[in-house]
Length: 222
Image (cartoon, rainbow, N blue to C red; front, side, top):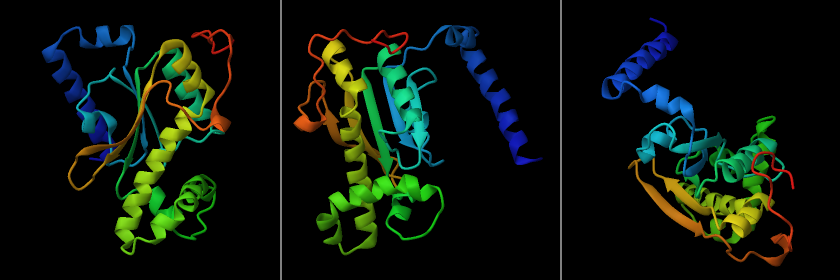
């Protein structure tokens, strides 16, 4: 049997399992989604968001990319972020990196990888910010692990610097932003950083809305 057909068979078994527990499961699921969490994770196949958090469909709104990046010019992540915050009104945003991340590992090299180098450039920028600390770590694996952590922490900062999050902090007093790390060797999650609504940022990153009304949740327009 071809491997992809096994996925279709597994789906049928999953459907029957859900229906055996609740005959109305899919009818109820189809009505709406009200997730409390936005998960921004790495595309790595070993870090499935629902599996590692023990959550069910409908509980996490998920965005994944290489090395769990929040890039201010990436319309994909910004669109996901705006929808999650302004329409779904998630209470928490979790940025989850993982030890052994291939994206972070390749950012430490000088390999010409084509288009991916443009994406990894953002991780190299994180390295430059913390180069003194990182270059003081002699063990290559420990240095990689620390860069994974620092990259995750920086993505938390990048989220807080967006107008989307700052406006939500002002008008809804949410979401809280978390930086987590997943350990492939143990299966455990660890929290590295947390930013509550209203956390003070460097002035250069703060937007001054004054009495400006909040965005229309349906359109994102003011």
